[in-house]
Length: 115
Image (tube, rainbow, N blue to C red; front, side):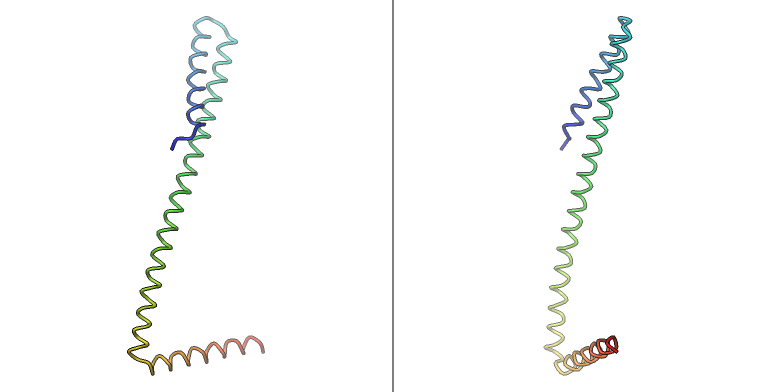
């Protein structure tokens, strides 16, 4: 989607070129100078519109990347949850011992920080 500032800037720039050329042809320094000023204003507005388009495109790309990463993370989490569930159902005693060891280790960490 093209920003309206780009369109109006390009139109002003073209109008300024035409006005400056007519001023040059007729020898009118006032029209020539006004045309050049209008041309520069139009170019600046066009660049501003291009910048807004670039920022909008970058934001859209960042949103798409974040959305894709979120979806992939969700799939990995579901796959990991299924795998852990299968391991616990296949090896319940080992799972209980591992959970106990992790709990004991966390308890030591918490109590060590309070001392």
